[in-house]
Length: 137
Ligand code: THU
Image (cartoon, rainbow, N blue to C red; front, side, top):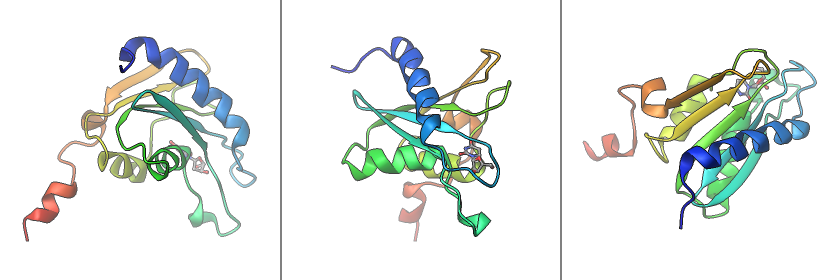
């Protein structure tokens, strides 16, 4: 049985905060942790940068790909914790990546000031291009 989402969100944010420890961000020093709720499981990720700067992968995509690669495709929510006082919003590439698995994904991001961004992905990426669009060939 799936846990009710509001109760799970605090735990998810805590997992994202802990996942920041795994960030490899020697270039930007902008360390980000993410945690997805996939079914009833929490799967985490952190950003991984590269000497070829544009090759960096955001924490959100690491967490989501980690879950999917484990066979957990039922992404229900994602939490993000960056270094800023204000909540870090997922970048456009991550919004597109996450849309593939659930356009109604709950996105929560917490800043060090305790403020939270809490939106469905569909509000952050309106009129998204998704798998169904490929059927129109
Ligand atoms: N980054 C994330 O991991 N998630 C976000 O939501 C925003 C940006 C990473 C990418 C890069 O390693 C660093 O933060 C600076 O852009």
